[in-house]
Image (cartoon, rainbow, N blue to C red; front, top):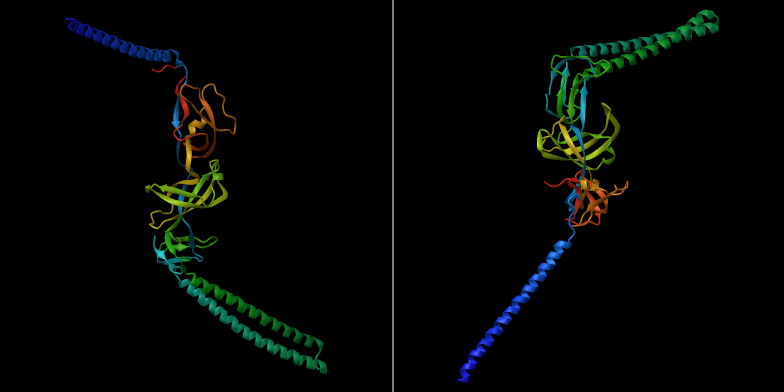
Length: 402
């Protein structure tokens, strides 16, 4: 049975060939895996090892955003316009017509003096003026008579009826009478001035409001005696409009060069710590204010006060916006100050930051600096958002991490 014997022998040959094929496949994969492992081992072996003592740095990412530089100061809230109202005459206050916080109109009576003595002085001046006018009339009549006597004396002297002495007496009497008329008329002017003064003092017995405004302070009560001698005493202080206020801020001499009229500002007060009030710098005064050897300059900030929350005398914490950049690359200020170990510091006037690629030494990137808020600074240079700039040592040199 030759055919039957041939079939088993063919099956054995096919089985052996399959085993050899599988053996070759396994061998190929083994070689591939071994080659990959060898390459990985070579990479691990030949890769540069990090120096355990090499300095490690802490970085901060470059970001894009807004930066605002502000000058801080302390100030006080004041009314934009205040008027001190005093008394121009002396006497006893009869009535006080207004009180604190009252709204007054220009020309409104604030207080009145007792006018009894003022009326008496006015009547006395009026009588003195009338007497002076009568004296003028008498002097005019006397001068007319003296002139007639002189004319008559001249005629008699021309006729030889009287001597020169009598004629001279007549001339002198005429001139004296004319001078008396001028003197009496001067007395009339003097008494008229006294009468006007008494009348003015009578009108000054009423203390009037010089402006439209509100009463901030009152320093007088009914029955009080006021003495106006060399300086008029202040009885009332009026504010023109408390809806428009101002802040007088003390700017330090180190910051005064950055503050200019027209700059925006904002401030807070202790009464409303969560509310920010917007203001504008309107004036920077040149007169220095020296307190314990500290020099400051007064800046005037205008602020609207429609809700009347701000009151005169409040202490304000002021910030004046002197510069801003709304879309800038920002780096931490520490990055501009940091210099890696072994590197030379930057030259004066040169600014830069340090960056480090993995496995490489730090390198310096030159930048141009702009606005700074004390924490971040706007820069221009070969930097992009997200780049880590070095700001400090993470691990001191020579110290192993624990």
